[in-house]
Image (tube, rainbow, N blue to C red; front, side, top):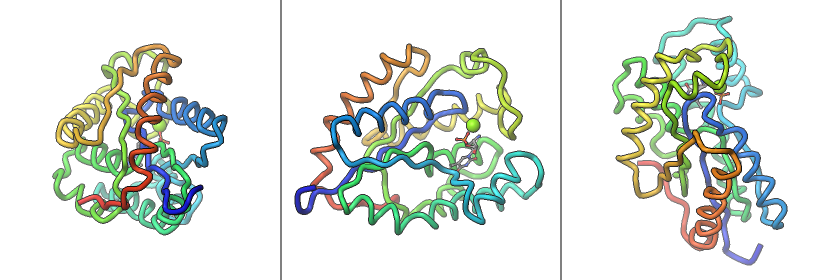
Length: 211
Ligand code: NYM
Ligand code: MG
């Protein structure tokens, strides 16, 4: 990396089964093939102590109040912030499968107030770009049976999608919406073209915080 050039914080957001995991993997592979320093991350990170509690909740082996699980998801991001900051400043681009806006969307879809949901996210490093993979909830449900995890029901996903739509229009300056129903290769090509514009642009910008 040349001096002072930082990596980009790129987030994939969207409902379950919208293709985030596939698209983030394809993007990481592409950047690697171009010798651009890149690392994949995903939230929740189920490996930490907090992550294990989150996993127990998602797999229905543990019940928690909505507020408590919300704060655990946020804490799971905070526990990685030093590492995220260090990597970005070293020039590594981070491609992240879910971040703060999943936290807000899933909890607000349960009825928690959106401002309350946002509060513990403030101060986290702000994404340079959020790639929102959007598809009608019915399309996603028709991709095959949802898994067994909590939240994986078409009706609930519809409500999550509504919150993502709202966030997307509010945060338009750094959100990019993509039609997740199109073939994966087409989607990938669009994502690559936005990423190639983004990397040189943010390389000399200071890191920002979610506010
Ligand atoms: N989820 C994920 C939340 O409810 N809040 C969060 O902050 C994050 C990061 O966890 N259904 C939910 C969304 C998913 C579930 O994520 C597990 P994944 O990407 O499906 O493993
Ligand atoms: Mg999932």
